[in-house]
Image (tube, rainbow, N blue to C red):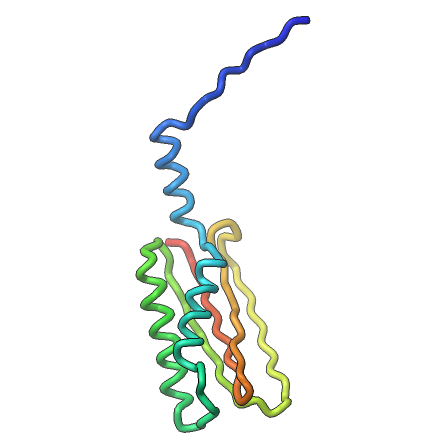
Length: 128
């Protein structure tokens, strides 16, 4: 029987550059989630709920998330929101809707909680 030989094509440096460029424009949820988790834990670990500190904590979380996100140097605009509430047994409901590029844009919501409070931080990444 006749067997056709297909030579293996190794990627060129141009192919590699194109792949790197494509990856640069993709929102990687796992990477963003680890940033949010690190920032929330650094700010809120070992903290009890203090109403007078809520403004400071939310500002710190938002600012430090943005700082960390800008350090990964990807072509995205970011929006960071955070909601911090005392745990009282009441539920917190949120909803979000986006009209964007479903391939490159995305968001991550991360919930941090301890015995006295819960924090929901969301990062939206929009490719530019």
